[in-house]
Image (tube, rainbow, N blue to C red; front, side, top):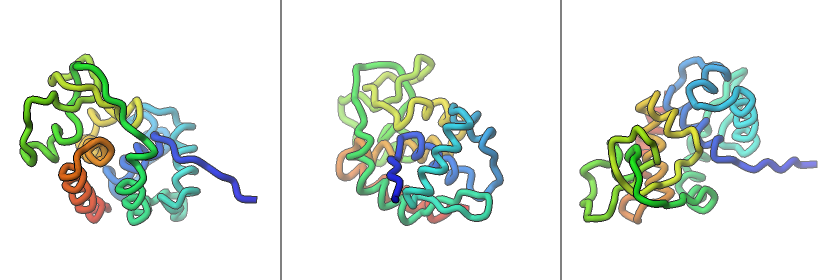
Length: 177
């Protein structure tokens, strides 16, 4: 009997964090603290990504399966984890408004996409993060922030933004480890 297991948004956050930290050692408790998740959430995320072939177990380690992850992020993510847009708010820039994409696209009068954050330095249109604790985790890790913002471009961007973000993600994934 095959057990079906659905990918959840926190699983993507977990995988992007593994890519951001590279091949460094990590613990479930340490990742849980950094990601704003419970250790049990991180454990279950690890099980789900292995079951979905988005990562492999290598001894005691979980290693992202870059090819499969890329395929899922580039072709499925936008349909599975549809971002919600909201009202104007203060927040953290994401998608094309974030550092990895800043200056690549002409910004018209539209408000920039932001993750709502009362301490945010930018006013823009609310864009729901992939997982509720993603902005907190992004504040603690610039590499993770860049990956999450690029993933948001794939989820919510226009064609040119998506294509740029996919190329940029592929470059960063190629440097994994």
